[in-house]
Length: 163
Image (cartoon, rainbow, N blue to C red; front, side, top):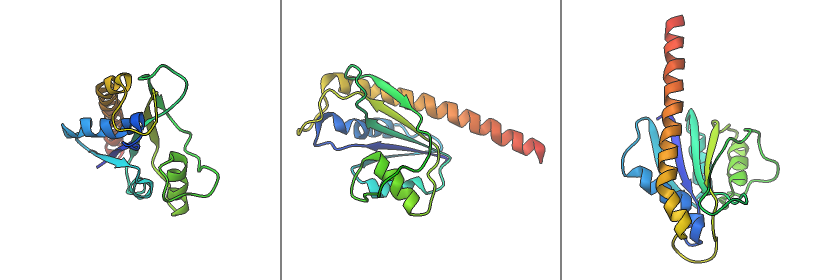
């Protein structure tokens, strides 16, 4: 597998379960060359998985940035190791990356597909605007994967031509 698609979040806190819902939606139809998984709140498992040799990782999560609930974001982190001590029990993405670096590895480039939550309160179920964004986010992830896969194929072909 060249790509990892990781849904993250806590389904017991409303819209925080967005990434999990998108991972379930994407898992309905397998994606060639991609592992799709719902990591929930298992940050340590995600840290280890990020070190498994993927070319690129897509992480899907609720991301409060001040937009209207249901707004989708594509975020390209800079890839530097975050400061601070890693917390192997947390799902905060900064801690996940810090733990991966603490293990002595280097995660692949990451794209975060985020959704503006309406509410991250105790309770199961997504708010209506966030639930409506699940299929849109799944389609967005598929487009991003397709673009990355096409770029990887072209790069592989150029390498073969040089040999």
